[in-house]
Length: 333
View 1: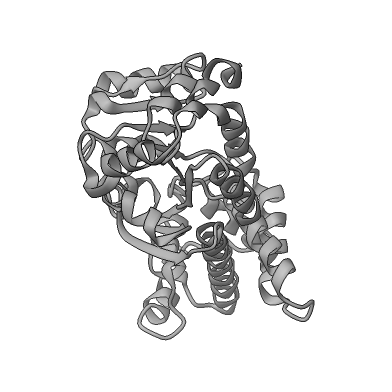
View 2 (view 1 turned 30 degrees about the vertical axis):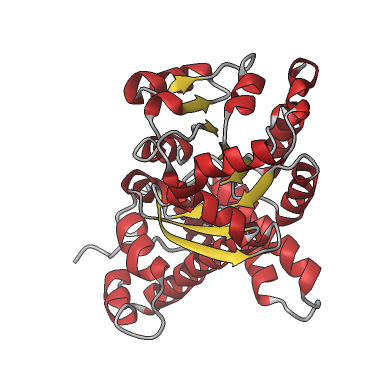
């Protein structure tokens, strides 16, 4: 549908189109037109942060649930884009951001509106996605003169709201420089992972498999200590002043596990998806003798089956607790 309606954009070729788009993006000009696709827990506040650098009326938003896009438009002055108008919005945009559940969803959107992209425009995929699929998307878009960056983020909903996320960017440095002011609206730490498309997604997948591993290791260690007779809070007081500390022991354990509120705001299913992507990368690059992260991935997959995918990712520790026969809270005096 969109290809038939919007392939006229392919006639807009040549240096004038490319340079005009580059000029609109470079420097974070408020005149740039952006389209943000995917207003989930992370995407909604990220799109809001973009309005700090982009004139809200030139900021378009789309979500599979139209009422969410309309709410964003009502609250922020952005333009809600319907499914029927998505191709036209892509044709207008200098930069298209995607923040979707997985790379399959991104690929589906890109395929749907592929003929609508203007030469010189840029796609920035903030999904925690598959690095190998990202390479394919980048190659496909490059044939149309469209730049692509994979730029997954870390830092949670709080970081997205505050504009303090870390983003790990894969793709050409020259393309990154064109959109860096926009990324800076929601990311305090912008790391160029490499010129190869998919580098950002590869780095994010290993970050998250390490995150899950730290959580499970901390839970198993505290379970052993509690069964020995050492209370979790006492153990953490020592560990967090010692070499065994991690974000899991410093933040997740005291804030979400010992309190039993399990409220970080990231689904177990999404973490396990990222863990699976990390496992895929390890299988593609390391020999069978590299077993540590593979074992951790298997444990987290078992934990999701145990606690359910719609739980907070910190609830995976219940799997460790149930196997050990302990609950990671201090006993009553």
